[in-house]
Image (cartoon, rainbow, N blue to C red; front, side, top):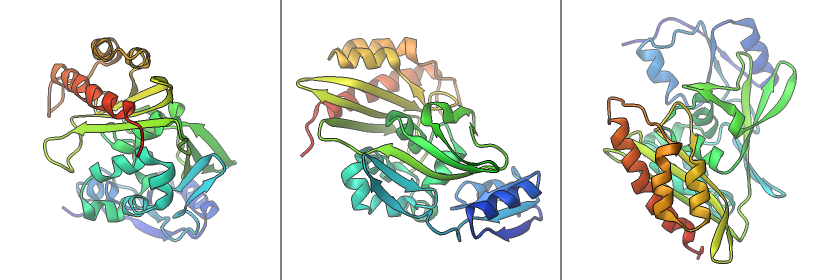
Length: 281
């Protein structure tokens, strides 16, 4: 199929993009376009204006600033995977990116696009929640910052307003005692996950503290498994797996039943618990 007719504009600055959004009630932003182009072609999206933000300078940078890593909205997945800053200071992101689609998708898809699209089966939103990161947004009233816990509102719904542009994401830079884990199950590598888990914790001797388990593919947004987190902190993996029944309520979908997804969530938790217990090389 072909998309419905639309106008095209290329934004040169963030303020330019915001101004263009304000002029149109149904404009859409184009970054990597890996999700948008498909929805346009299937006419699931029919904007009157497409605003290309790829010309905005500075949004393709990855930098460490103090105790944080800043990843610009236009950073491509492949670029992040090759980044020394990501490898050293954001290892959870480095673990997750190879699971995103295929090389062609990672070459064009952007970090900001994945976060803004907020697919419930996507890897990076869950990573952002697990890392207690935040999203920097440019809007009509200037810049504001939203914590990841408050950013994802519902199915494909975020804290982004109609005239907002996602500018940057910020995550804490990994410290020596931080531990991370990531795993997902998909029918084929590159497919959306049936169930996935992004995890972060802090080693305290032989135990863990500040455990954060963020599941994806089990709800409308990334889901924290708080009862399981407490059990993992006590070193009680079996108890944590049992606790998932109180943390998660996966819906049935075209891929699997909720019951199967809950079982798979436990399988992943055992794998990720082992990763969290490992000392980095």
